[in-house]
Image (cartoon, rainbow, N blue to C red; front, side):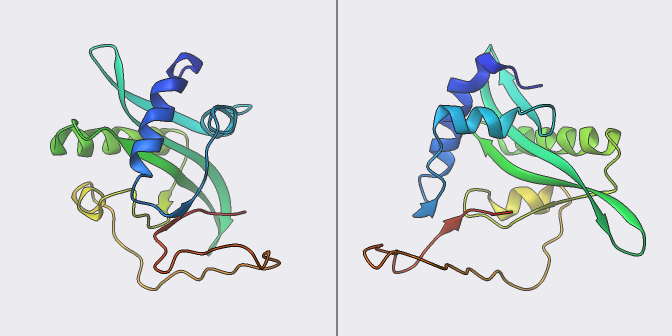
Length: 157
């Protein structure tokens, strides 16, 4: 499990994972600390090797309605250092999935992101949901310069 002293390493991982994003969160240390551990709502697991945090997965559980009540674990952040081998990445994701199931999640979901390789998700047993995303921006200032080809990582509730 994540500990507050892991924050600097997690901050570095999140910044590294978002290098290829041109429209996304500008995490501050305070904001990321809330994202990773706030009043026991989210759950964050870290991958630690030789005393150094090499990865993190951050999720929370939300009750949704399908044909009945369904507890869904939603992954907000998944970041892994480039040095982590492919098999270890898959193993870490599977450990996180088992943790979600042990907390009562019936399934897990995550928005597509340019920060997470599709091959990792497929290799760990995830199935892409067909369809796309819609980005809606309202009340934007006329001086906002939007990227010509946005690679977006953001989600709003």
